[in-house]
Length: 51
Image 1 (cartoon, rainbow, N blue to C red):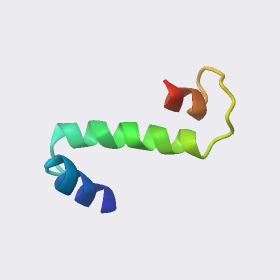
Image 2 (tube, rainbow, N blue to C red):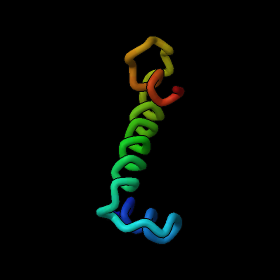
Image 3 (tube, rainbow, N blue to C red):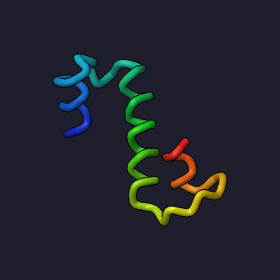
């Protein structure tokens, strides 16, 4: 819910638009990397977030 409100208010996108799904996927990758152990090995959440 919060993500949809932010996307609508800041980016002026509707929650059901394809761009919103792409942004959500990138955001989730970033968040997984943020809370993971900072080990730069390909395939780990941290490496995906850095990429």
